[in-house]
Length: 294
Length: 215
Image 1 (cartoon, chains in turn green, purple):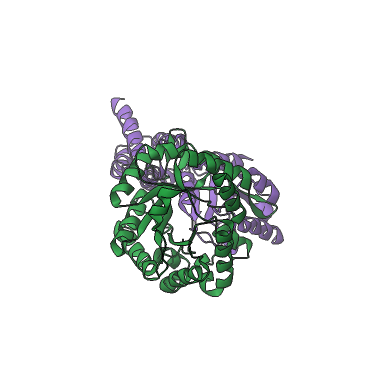
Image 2 (cartoon, chains in turn purple, orange):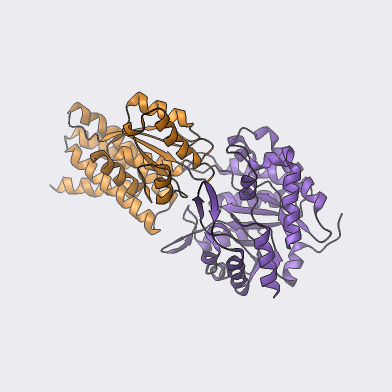
């Protein structure tokens, strides 16, 4: 057992830096369509490990395990449902091997890819079952805390938080994906910032925030809105702009420098945990560290 | 006349509230009591377009839109068979639609499919994760006018290019109009791969599809 501060105590002392993207880096490394990124925890573990290490070296306090799509519901969509335990356990192991003394490993949990009626056909029970299984495996593999992210349906996020709280005493970070409409920030399911924050708070989340879809400059105004409804620490993990396909390659056009400047603005508005989502890489984290420490 | 206005209001309410049973009731009543079916479909279509506009405005979200589309589908399922009986078909054209291979996102695609079918297209929805060959084989089989291909990931967008390239290889590119869908799809991408168009929303997709049918 490593002897470090609880992550929530560290948050009280200073801004905590997360990592950046995983999926978009794997695609650049040749991950093929239809192959779940989590399968690389087993078949290409050195590469995953190298990415984690690059993030720690860039200044990340925390890396997120490569388990975003590691729930049974999600893996089953790719016919990898039988590998839930193997992929999730291995993900934590490979991160553990290179984790520095003062580093943290967060068990990453993304959406199941399934929807409640009327959009889809699954039930809340299905969500709970899939997240109970995944969080239990991650807790047994000894992650430091959970990071539930990219949730577009508050009900699914709530089910995931409750599952994570049920299986262990670990802290639960919860991050919602909002889109910016003419009426403000909402999930695609129509959940408002207030609904999301108050519901997740009640469900037992320890940290609440937002990630994905919004570019860094679009996320700045969201932070005070979240703050309005909670005193919990806020996490912000925006995208490096909108993805564009240029000459057959996916490009995110926000520069690490501009991104870091936006992140700094969010820190000024009391975001306590920051990092990057799609299109970011270790260079973004370096810039964030420089800007936040300056 | 009072009844007609009443039915119009009710139809609109049924669609905008996504009330499936009310939509069903209205459709059945209209047939039983010999209403002008085409006029009713126009009203329903206007309502579903309004639902789409409300979505654009941030007033409606996915659940509301899906419920509206479902109510529309139920009403149309009852109304359209009577149209062909009367040889008064609103048929516009045939569409093969799906989400490309490797991509399991199918909400947007399903929505466009419902809207197209509501507007009078004969829609063959192949679902998600559809191989290029399946799109083409189906389009050839049913002699489709349009092929609509959705891709929600920049990594699966290449499948849209593959579809166009395969059509060219098989010398049947000119037989079909190809529309691209999906959040990351841009006008630039459409031009780059030589597709026939893309639209920002399900509503504008339908408008574009209708426009292309006239060409």
